[in-house]
Length: 413
Ligand code: HAM
Image (tube, rainbow, N blue to C red):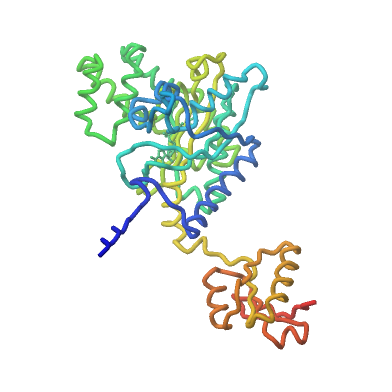
């Protein structure tokens, strides 16, 4: 007797996703909006490989992302990593050709990113992240164009400013407030890091982090007082941003929120994060201005502003707001045939319709009409042509609209 082979069961590793065709409908809706919004605002597409040197990624990320990097030694003992975000790679690419590239650059990409995160709603260990960045331009119009592109993408997906808010703040402004309270600039990076945890851990733990960072009790109390600031009057760049957003038509989506800090350490100016208005989901996108990233990886000084917009949260939000069936629209023509004798006519018709620019799903073998129409319906064809012996004889078939059930005649020759 042979032992029965053990049945193997493989699933995608925890936190990694498979995309079945029905999942691709959602993904395409999201990616199409990303691409259209990027193109509409004049961003040029770029791409890079998923594997980077570990050192580049670990050095440039904030502490949190740094600890989440998937990394490994290759067969030549190179320490490599899967990118956790696109920004260090973008900085590397720009630094490499900085002399030839005409600034400002407006670049966009959809990058698959990997982070070994604690799995919660909206957070996976792999996600696609749309990035839009402007490098080499310090005008506040750069922030407006970057945030405006993301708002445009959300609208193209079918959401309105009732569904989301972009919370904006400025690290520079917060730094000024902290300095005015006597907290020296060299402590600010630690303070930002601790404050970024607000809402994710109790304030007492944040206070302990601040004290560990060398702040006195008075400094900690002052820091929490500052976090109660409700207005950005006195911050010229935020006032200007709100003014320009009004002209650009998305001021209703913006809201000043001093609690937006951002976990990544490279931000230096305006920072922003987008949330759904009902507060149900994690951040939809986030970004800000980063002035020093290029120099820290050996490039020439160049200011930059950009954002990362993941596919996971927005897809959850779209399903909740538009309904799970919103992407199931009908398209294309299904062509089928009853007996082997009609196969050639069906293929010829399919080729003709494709040459006319239609999407055609041709049945691969003869079928009973019931089965053919059930298949066409399940695959959301808009129209269907089923060819039987009489049709070939007459040289005419009928194209059925699967929504209205109306039929039109179609010449087979
Ligand atoms: P981030 O805030 O770490 O920023 O990520 C940006 C967005 O990516 C988040 O708002 C979220 O939509 C998505 N995201 C991040 N991690 C995950 C995850 N584990 N699962 C699902 N979605 C996720 C950055 O990465 C910056 N590099 C963005 C940037 C570009 N700043 C300037 N330019």
